[in-house]
Image (cartoon, rainbow, N blue to C red; front, side, top):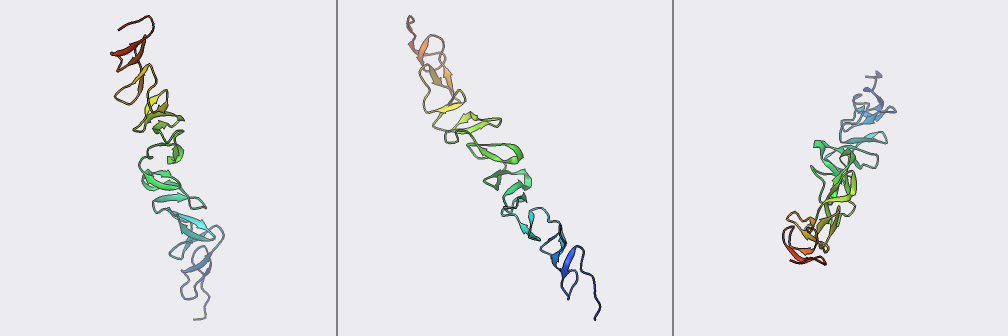
Length: 174
């Protein structure tokens, strides 16, 4: 019809057949999948003038490398992807729902978030001793039902539990 019509909001250029369809956006705006210019919604990131989806579909917000920063449903993040409600064994939930490895993740199944070198619970083949995991409790200790090394009663070098001593200290007898 020979009449110049303005492009849609925030468009730098648009289709001659339909001015609401943007080809490119003004600086600071991004082209979405509906060919409109604006800010990118959740699950998308503005890259080179376009809204690109985050690499993980469960990701609500990602960085320019498309690594997840925040997940839908407050899921935790493991290796830059949404993992689930809780971190796996050997990891703890730190800041921003991020799973980080415990200090001794090969032996430790649960550690203290404020001090990840300190284990709270050990994996199956290990026992907890002074915030660390050991294969066997040392002499003078026994493994209780919670897989924690507990000190034998006083004057006892080896015991079954805190009531039954097997070997006494020098100058003591059973």
